[in-house]
Each structure stands twice: as C-alpha cells, then as structure tokens.
Length: 249
Image (cartoon, rainbow, N blue to C red):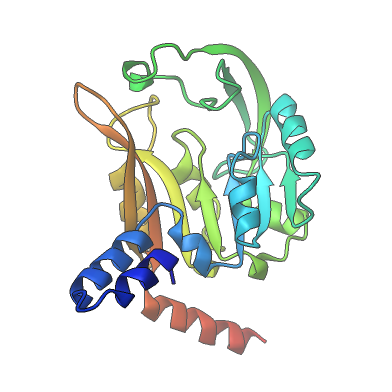
C-alpha cells in the first residue's frame, strides 16, 4: 500500500471513505498498473526513457524500436538493465510490408509511417526531416522469430504515433496473454488516417478489455486531446484464459 495512505489511516477518526477514495485515485495514475504485472512489451521504444521506472518495478521488458540510430542509443541505454532487451523492428498488422517511415526532428519521438496532420496545432515546431524505407512485421511474428517467452510479459505498452490499432491487429493471438494494455491515443486526427480513442476502445472492448484509467497530456485549442489510456482485461476473461492455458498443457 502507498505509505501516504497508511499515514492517513493512523489519523484518529479519519473517514474510511476518504481513505478508499485516495486509494482509488492513486491506483488510477497512468503507471500504477505496473505494480500488478511481471513484464512489459513496449512497442515504440525510442531511447527507452521509461527504463528506470520499469527497473524500479523489477520488470522484465521487451523494447521494440524501428529507427536504426535511435535503436543504437536504446541499446546503449539498456546496458545496465539485464532484464530489459531491445529489438529493431517496425510493428504493424502485416508481415514483410514495405513502408515509408518518416523521421521527426524531436529525436525521432514523433516519427511515424503516417503523415502529420493536426499534430502541428499542438506541436508547431515539430516536422519530418527525412524518411527511410522499412519492412514491417506483426508482434505475433516477432515473438515467434525471436523466441520470446510471452508468458513473462503480461502488459503491452504502445507509443507508435497513430498506428496503435495496427499493432493490436497484428497481435490478435497474443492479446489474451495481457492483463493490461496502455496506449497513447487522441480523439482527433493527429496524423492523417490515424486511429482514434474510439477505434481502440471498440477493438479492445470486443476482446474483453475495459478502460482502467485515462490521463490527458496534451490539448488542442480548437478541440480534441491526447491521452495515455490504460485498458484492463475483465476478471471473467482472465479466469477463462487461465483455465484455457491449463488445458493447453
């Protein structure tokens, strides 16, 4: 339990309802779910900025990053983290498909296979400075090719700049393995043809996931916002998956 909540409970006559409210508020923070998982697959790694956070939770981590130069930086950043491994792949819903991958001028953080659209309304200084050709792979195929022990990873995190739904579609056979899925998403067209919150919500809802928490990190004056959203698999679906795996053995 959060030590701050313990202090609250020691205060004489402190309303138990307020303690429960504070606990629920803490649990809904964007990364609170990390305390409940054993491993993370992070698609759209960039330089691995969250590596210290993951290490603090003693997690096994698979990082996936497509840009060669950024991937080299990622590998260097992970040298002190033996439980965190990096792979250089472009993840979509197709295997062996060639894409023009646009690289952004903010250390590659806004890079995407999609063209920028209303992104400029929030981050006017960001633009594409070059493009490279990359072939894609699905997450399911990557797991097989690299012989990743998927049972070690019960959370999926995506930051792929508008293509998160493609990642999910290419991981259809793996989704039942995850307890939590965290994604960046917007309710307006940040990139041309990008998926929106409603698209991800519909897709995951049909597969037993419900929104667990939502944190707004950017707002467009003309309307619309960008969020970090965490989805949690329903308890009933988790139970069915556990019994299903036992039968597989």
